[in-house]
Length: 119
Ligand SMILES: *[C@@H]1O[C@H](CO)[C@@H](O)[C@H](O)[C@H]1NC(C)=O
Ligand SMILES: *[C@@H]1O[C@H](CO)[C@@H](O)[C@H](O)[C@H]1NC(C)=O
Ligand SMILES: *[C@@H]1O[C@H](CO)[C@@H](O)[C@H](O)[C@H]1NC(C)=O
Image (cartoon, rainbow, N blue to C red; front, top):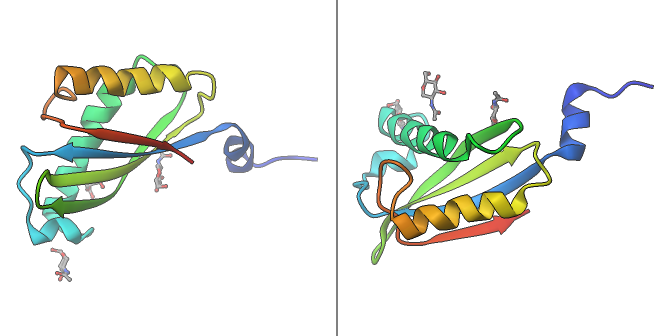
């Protein structure tokens, strides 16, 4: 009996759904369009910053930006999924994000709040 790589991975991976406020990132209606250059550029910035943040955690990670939203009080928000094959370091994951809130940035932008949710 053989398992495909993706099936095997699905059994040992965790997906974190994380919402981050990005008050420094201007919102435009293009950010609602996933095929626009604006969406791609902004999503890439987020992906690069988060990849940098989680690099110390061993394992394979894949950061995917799901959508950008605009909220009147906090401004631009990004919702992302982070897939990780590392199922032992959930606390390290949380701590990295909590520490970056404390510092106020993930390498490049200011963050007010973060709502880690585990699915
Ligand atoms: C989304 O962006 C693409 C690429 O710029 C463009 O061709 C398309 O018309 C846009 N769609 C909407 C609904 O604005
Ligand atoms: C942005 O577009 C480039 C080129 O098509 C692609 O390689 C990259 O994955 C895209 N980035 C995001 C975050 O979707
Ligand atoms: C990361 O996830 C996206 C969305 O599920 C997928 O399209 C992409 O191929 C994945 N990248 C890698 C390197 O696995």
